[in-house]
Image 1: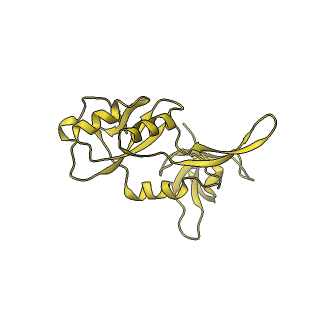
Image 2: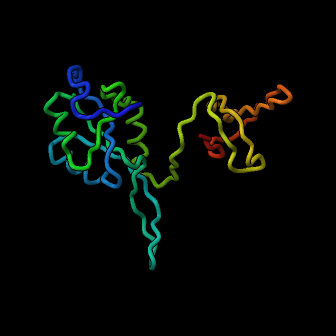
Image 3: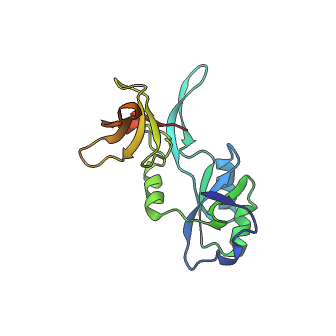
Length: 184
């Protein structure tokens, strides 16, 4: 996925209905961009999670972004609105593919809205797909490397395949997803 800049893909951007689009923003500008979009009467959303902040003399619950560096905006992307969005202080670009802004799915936004404000532990993880090299980071198999085979299915764990080239053999191991880390 690439990011578009002003002027790219504008000819085919206008749609008949509003969708949620992700904005890539400057580091630590989530709140400023959110407020800037709202001041322009645009519907904006940036999901946050409650965490305990350690201060010198006390602990306090604070809200931090679930997806640092991103804010979502609900728009039909007419050209005037597009430029209002892009010119908001802190916005770097709209998330796009081949120069055309790509909307998030309703299911993705609904899931983020459910997570918004939760005090549950939410971890940002690298997106893993079949064939990615991974390492087990915890438990009795810590340090084992292999290839990610599939996501969890009901009643099963994630599968990692360990290939031993010398012996021309592969072993499949089921492991909890929290113990996996994607390798470069």
